[in-house]
Amino acid sequence: MKKLLVMSLVLALFVIAACGGGNNNAPENTGNNGGNNAGADNATAEDVTPEKGASLLVWESKEERPFVEAIAKEFTAKYGIEVKFEEVGAADQVQKLTTDGPAGLAADVVVFPHDNLGKAVTAGLVLPNDFYEEQAKSENAENAVTAVTYDGALYGYPRSIETYALFYNKALIKEAPKTFEEVLDFAKTYNDPKKNKYTLMWDVGNFYFNYPFIGTTGGYVYGDEGQNKDDIGLNNDGAIEGLKFFSSLKSSLLPLKSGDVTYDIKKGLFTGGTLAMDINGPWTIGDYKAANIDFGVAPIPSINGKPSTSFSGVKAWYVNTYSKYPQAARLFARFASTKAAQLKDFELTGAIPANTEATEDAAVKDNAVVQGFVQQFNQSTPMPSIPEMGNVWTPIGAAFSDVWNAGKDPKAALDNAVQQIKDANGSAGK
Image 1 (cartoon, rainbow, N blue to C red):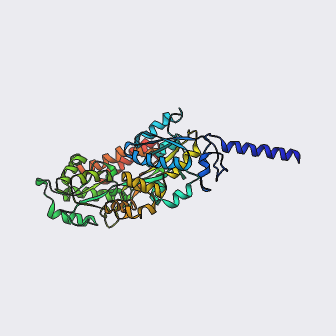
Image 2: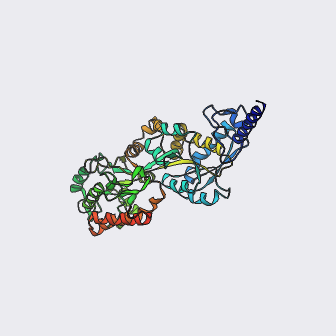
Image 3: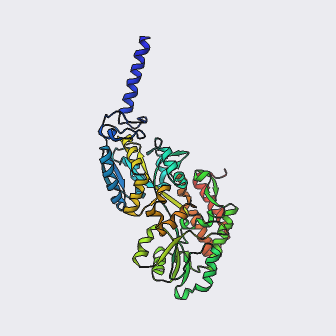
């Protein structure tokens, strides 16, 4: 009995030591630890307990500085944990984390677009969002949660969403068309290429913007919600149907080479008042407002009777695997991704919330432009986040280009693209 008691005490001391340390493998603590540090004194029973003496470094882009500094100030006031900000572009963070993480130089909390998640996870750079998993899943849009999940595990703390939608110039077309049939009917009376008058433009040479012509009619990139590299749906019957429809639009809607429909050209025509509609992202809002264009934003018109699905991206916080303070980092990632935090981000930077209640808040809901993007996001498809997504862009982009510019048969173009993707994935013949 005495030996058993001693062994129990030793085991208890071992568990306490493991929970209190600042190592990467420290298990979760499900409540307040009774005041071992300043942060824990203010923590709720639903929070992890931050490590004693913790301080954090956060990476984010220049555009998000106002929000990060504001939320960090609130976090420090509540938990007594200092948070420093370092400017690193979201798209550059995974690459930087690859070298700086193991070297102990990286931020404790990082943020990047979800299509970089597969690379980060396979390299062992980020920890799962396990403690706050249920909150993240119940509070945020399903598409957002799916986007920051990899191989069945949730990693991200969703913060904002992004997709493209239909901008329309109200001086040229009063209401947004709901179907592509309506778009084509309008084009019959409006299009006049000699006067640079075009009904609709999008980045015809970019698969990111061309995805609706694959995804809406039943095609897809990778199966199992973008996780299965061996299940490619880019040349199935639905994809072929969509690409045939895409091909038909050149003569009936946009008689230009794909290389002649660039962002700058579209911007010039839309702000100049001769382009009626533009499929673009929220990053365009500022330019169009500055041009004093009275515009609206609506979902992309339906294709062959089906709601158009666009590619979407999700920005989320992630906890660096090599952080000295993983518990404090988890706590910050949660704090900076709540409904209140996402509304603050929207207020300060215009980032569209992923939180479903936040999108129903008056500040967001009463903004017609934002609601256009939210509606489109709700019918969007998250870009696959597995590393093999990098093998898709060039072959499928070439297929769209061959069909649009050279009139290549859609099935032949897609079959060729898929074979190239399989070869690159090392899955040919599977």
